[in-house]
Image (cartoon, rainbow, N blue to C red; front, side, top):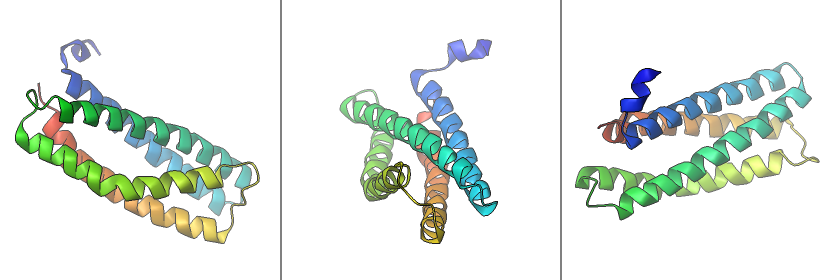
Amino acid sequence: MFFSFFLSKNQKLVKKWKSEHEQIVKLATKVITSYSDGNLDKAKGALVELRLVTLNHLMTEDIEFFKLLKENKKTDKETQKFVKEFKETFYDTKSVLMRFLKEHTSSDAVLDDKFFESFNGLVGVLGERIAFEEKNLYNKLDIK
C-alpha cells in the first residue's frame, strides 16, 4: 500500500481500472450463476450492480482518455494511437452494452432465456475486450 504513493497518475488509473475489470467479471459471473440456479432476484440484483460499476468505469475511461488525447505533448504518439483506436473500436459495443443493461435492469424487465443468451454473448465480447485493453492499452499507460 505504501508504494502506491510512488505510482504515476496513469499507473494509479490502470490499477483502478484493472480492479474494476475484476469486479465486472465477478458480477457477470454472479448474474450467470444466479440465473442458472433459478434465482432471478439475485441475478437481477447482480445485474444492477454490474450496470453501476460498468457505467462508472466507462465514464472514467472516457474522461481520462479524452484528457490523454488532448495532452498530446505529454503522451507519445504510439499511446495516442492506441487510445484513439480503442475509443473508436469500442464505441458500438459500449452503446449496445449500456442499452442492454438499462433495458434489463428496469423494474419490469423479465430475465428469460433470450436475455440469458444475449447476456452470455455480451460477456464473451467484453471478456475479449478487457483482455485486449489490459494487454495492449493498459501496458502502454502503466509507465512512470
